[in-house]
Image (tube, rainbow, N blue to C red; front, side, top):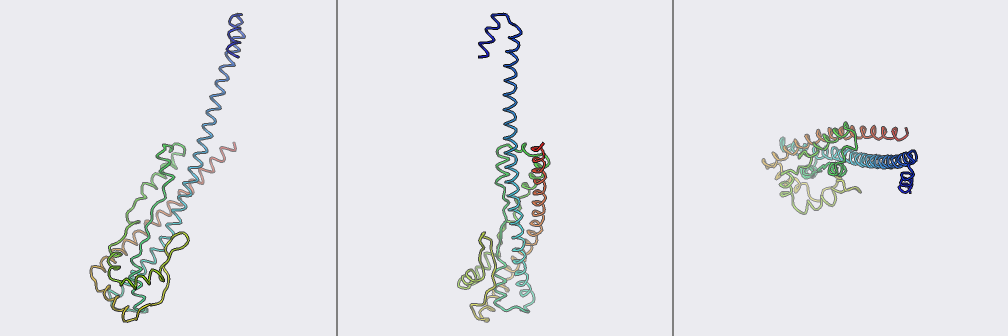
Length: 259
């Protein structure tokens, strides 16, 4: 329609009309490009917001997971300390031999922590880091760069070797009565009564406590639990800081949308 009109005006040498037609064409293209750019910006803003919300959910999952594991590692460490105290002194103290046997066994538990990084990997693999602010981008890079500490996912030799000493029947009882998992799959250590005599418990406890190499492995595992707790607390604090930064960025985006 416009092309036909311009052709007619050129033939008629109506240069004002030609200029007006040309302006309409240029203006239409300009508006079309602006609308396309605006739509792309809105799409980028929507993708950025989705990335931020999902990353925040990942960080909250990390934080909650770490809080559980820190508590669990404390339980494991307390059991290990009780076992080592007996191995070092030969004194039962306020514990029964069954409770000491449970202490040696539960000290072999492990609760590995793995950083939830699905959204961050998707963001980086898609090359979409530029959708978020430079400050937040750098902070997240540091958080995820430091996510692979082996201490947080280690399984000790003590775990394998102490379970090689405790009779299978006793282990079966412990798994069925002294251990469980909750609705989320997290581990729970439960109190339980003794299925064997005090004399049999004492015999097994002394087999464990008298194994010098095994006690060295237990001491190493207790040291690992201490380090894991320190790192876990630091990562939980860092996750909290990242969550706050994302809140700020999401708030900034909302303010810009309302302007």
